[in-house]
Amino acid sequence: MRATVCLPTYNELENLESMVRALGAVFREGDRVLVIDDGSPDGTGELADRLAVELPYVDVLHRATKEGLGPAYIAGFRRALADGAELVLEMDCDFSHDPAAVPSLIAAAEGGADLVLGSRYVEGGEIPNWGAGRRFISRGGNIYAQLWLQSRLRDLTGGFKCFRAKVLETIDLDAISARGYAFQIETTYRVVRAGFKVVEVPISFSDRELGHSKMSRAIVLEAIWKVPQMRLRALRGRL
Ligand SMILES: Nc1nc2c(ncn2[C@@H]2O[C@H](COP(=O)(O)OP(=O)(O)O)[C@@H](O)[C@H]2O)c(=O)[nH]1
Ligand SMILES: [Mg+2]
Image (cartoon, rainbow, N blue to C red; front, side):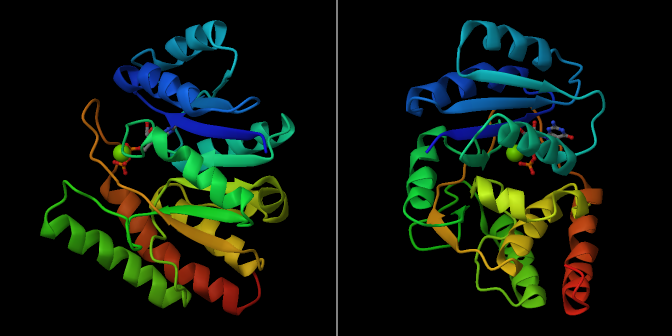
């Protein structure tokens, strides 16, 4: 199946080229990477254009304003679907998600899963550099979402995923309003609600070494209030 990796970037100048080349090293015939750059002031978008000229498997989607991860991914999903991708992946451009693990997500989708989650919290998953404090916060966030959404999925906040095209064509992308971690929770919850098969595969999650995180307090707060809102909407049959 032809896969397109959607790679959102905002100021990832130090990471983009090595990430794109690392993806090229694991790609099969027909696989592509779509860089979605929101006008990064550091020149990431221009670098992406140069890479697209040099490497036949690279496309670039430029967006004028930074609106957060959610809107960037939705624009990327639409482009990937229009270009005929059969599988659409999400991953960060900071090497937190290992490009060498992309084939394991693709294999699980080709093995029958409709949505594959790269998961830190299933047997074999790990976060080698995190201390007890960060683990506690991340696990707590996942348990909060699990309880509200009545889900057994263990990594609802992660951003390393692989969707079958038909899944993204079925769920209402226009209805998704979340921008940060909540975007990851909301996409997965909508896929579950639509009756699709979701499978978690273990990943090893690393901290970024170059560039800076765009995580903010607003992103965390959004997730805290959006999760109960999702559940209430689902109970009213509106999600
Ligand atoms: N296009 C786009 N990419 C973004 C935006 N915010 C974050 N990213 C990218 O999304 C990925 C994950 O963001 P990151 O800052 O590492 O978040 P963290 O992993 O939660 O700390 C990286 O590739 C970022 O460059 C945004 O508003 N627009
Ligand atoms: Mg990151």
